[in-house]
Image (cartoon, rainbow, N blue to C red; front, side, top):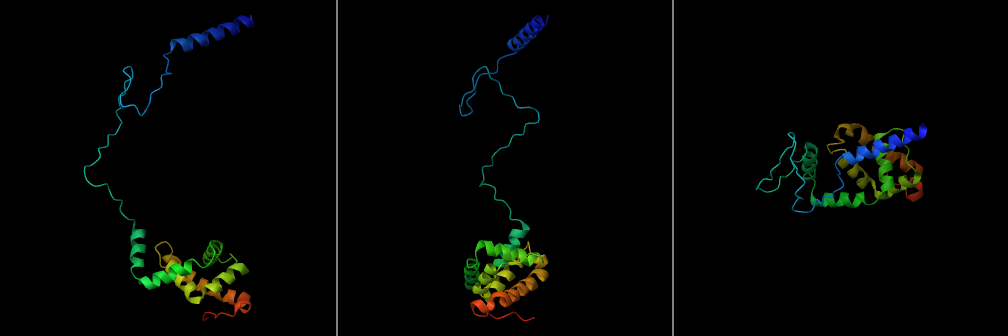
Length: 172
């Protein structure tokens, strides 16, 4: 009985698949001409988009992007080159560490990164900090970030300054 039931099930599965149309024909999407037996009609919710004959659409800048572009115009070429050179001095690891320290009271700075900051120099450090906190994304926390960066500088002077030549602290 079980064997005959199994045979009936297998036969019904085979019959089911044979009764359905076969969709094994492959369509080359790069072919210019569609096979004759294939019809494609868009559904009612299909949107046609026509390309304009004009120049390509230029994406509008975001307010943040416009703000930061305008910010760059407030610096001379000499100042921008100075800041660019400054940004290349610390390792990326230390740059991230210092930045996180300015945003988070509990993020400590390693001695290695303190050395990087101090070797960079006071003018480079405060110049980059002021530029970062003048950008659209960080301008709202500049009142916290800039003093914290000066505090970080002073801590680094106390921790490793004597080992590298005692840089000057920021005024308290």
